[in-house]
Length: 455
Image (cartoon, rainbow, N blue to C red; front, side):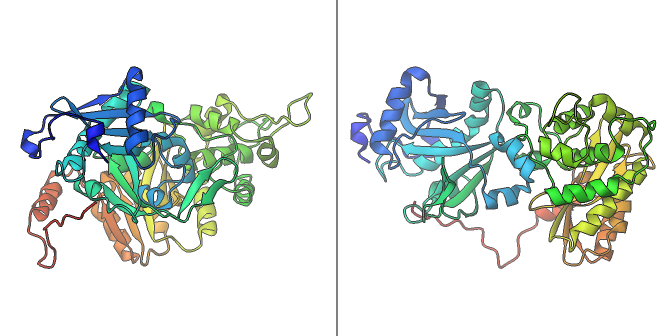
């Protein structure tokens, strides 16, 4: 790139200590100038704005030094989604919390200002969450980007502490065919915009300033396929109904809706009821839901009051046993990595799930009434759930700090598995021991030197 056509000021300073970097959101009056620089000097051109789209300008001592464009993330990336441990529903709902670096243009000739690319990129990343929240009303948690291995080594991404996650399969989004091959696989890079980004993106509860970015899954998107849904319905239809006999919505259909909503990450009765309304007419008919009088193909779903009555009167242990037995019968061989996590539906019922890392598919469940401190708390439920698992040979179980308990670890090891448990300040002695271990020098075969690669 010929920088003289863009800037006719003295060369940029090279030493990081002397840089005075400022990052600004480009305002609409400057869009034409910004896009023209990309069109003239970026090998991909300016591109077209789609969705939530943010332009950043990085200046050094008041002089424009780099331009960045951020936009919506890719709909599906196998390596990214596996790294996050997302289910299909989580990906659809939380995709807006990932932003993609679509353009990055340094306004200097190669070699003119060493380290300028990594320094301006790092500064833009620090400012990005605040800029995005101020512009669109929610805070993103993760950034993604791609490099073409045939043209770039991604040195500035390495220097800015981006994580190399994998390589794409070489497909591009197409309006008609959805995805078409382009025969140009790219390296995928991820950058957490929050220290707990990975945890937040797959947890039951998002931070408050991230929640406006959540999008409910489209109608008909269920955590189970049709044969699985019908199989679950047959099992739960045998459950005793705690309500009066003259009910409009049969217990099997109501419990199946509750189970699927829980497996899809719904956490309170209101979201259970909203989940039920997303079912398509064919799905409602298969569950035996009643048809509205005077219509040919409109099937009603239970309202908030129906779910409330069932959940407050239900034999939770019997329900969990039926659901657990069904999951075990369908699961077959347990996957290689399992996540232990609990979700509380207000004060009525908590569901503890041992789920597959890759797609969030549950493998075993138990119920509880409080996080901790009671005979039916989440910790006790976890011990009971792990005791029911026949074997964990060659498997790794991960869990948050609540389950960092000796009995849990012992059960996992006794069944042939391994564990990776989070440690927090609720166990100060254990945390201090872990921090002391982390401060020890690394094994002799590890090198701490960094090697620069031309990008």
